[in-house]
Length: 293
Image 1 (tube, helix red, strand yellow):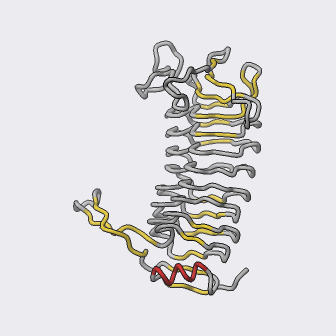
Image 2 (tube, one colour):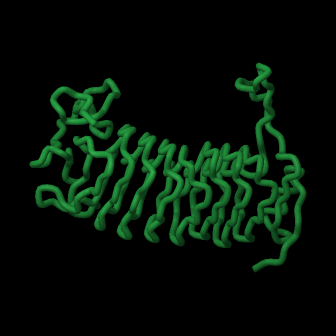
Image 3 (tube, one colour):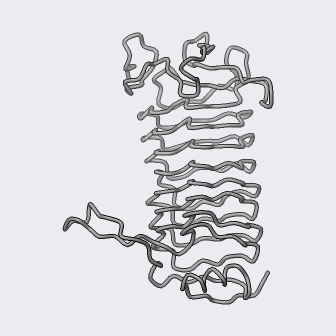
């Protein structure tokens, strides 16, 4: 496979300047570096509050099966930011130990099928968004931030590890996710599974305190949800709601949203006297009592 640019530096067809990086202000001097072999563009992480090492901003080569190096030019790699963003042909990648953060590194890698992640990893914000061919992934135990991580993937079943904090928009709009398990450590789940129409089984562990705005909005296959006694706050249209649609053509490809309604047949399970029972009562949802744990 050849590079899109005549100078051979990379394979981006976005129309943007090859040297543009979203994270730098237009007026800010960019002190990026290119590796001795020409394959990687990187920057040093700031000394305050960050681990010592470099953040890889771009892969400049054309190989589609890649093992990311643990060090580049003698500098430890600890972060990936937009590294392979838009590299449609990428098929597999091995992320080595010591990498802690992945931010949008594989966004839009439509052909990515196999990923190996390290035990050191803690955050995968936007990491695999729009990876349309990704069906399975190993989840290291230290990851706490899954914000916007998996929208557009083919992943069907996922258990978030203990210690997870943020799953906001984690699967928003996914047409494949069917089953998830949410640990009690989760503190943020805004729109986590909004528009996941095939999601049918959800386990929420005791310890979760808030079910945030639109967390399970338009989950039309989710007909029953057990909510632990620890939950005391429900956000806007967080549980049990779906859109009322007025279709504008016979093939139902276009529609207008006319409001919201409770998913037909939806039920909440919970402890008597809990916030879950109160939410069910206030929203006209069938409530099934279970014993506290």
